[in-house]
Length: 270
Image (cartoon, rainbow, N blue to C red):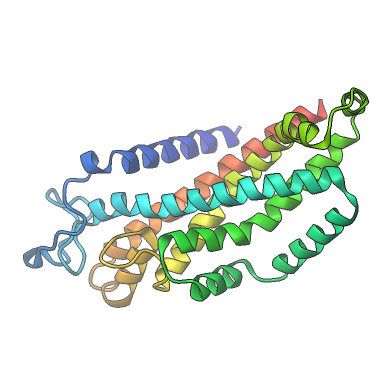
């Protein structure tokens, strides 16, 4: 019974964040880059509901516009990892043999690196930029997505209806595209909901380290960096507000992923 309110709150929060980010130009009352030195570190009030930062920039506007960067990078990384992992895992799980063994060893190598360390190495090796961060996070996520897709493909390929399909002369490509991918997609999607939370935290970490969105453009991680270094004691809202928004979004994704996974498990058990 306690789970339902948590799910409702999680969905409501994610919907509110999505709407705010999409309509950032409407809901944000100020230019997120506009500086007003006369209102530096203004406490939350009527004019600035979330206060201002060290340059007099409206924190609410920067949180909303920063959400575009943070959610955009996380979303792009999840899409790339999901597409690559689903395709590779499904094919290798169905084909098996030497291809499966080779891909499995490559996946094991990537999984041997800590998630953030691997992402950091890729960003530093290429160049700090939002697209690079998305690619780095996608590369770090893809091995686990591949494993999820492969496990689903192994479970599906032994089912009787595929034996009938193969007996009609259908080739591997047709079987994978028309039968395995649709069957393997749901568990991968369920996993990617939780992976989005991981990607969001990774983007914030890399931005906090100065490897994400370049200044003066906002992202939630960069706002944490800007607020924590110089203003936390004098103006805690500069750090606490983007930190709270980031944390609630991550927790909401985890709650939603848990519910979707449970529902899928119950459906498969029936």
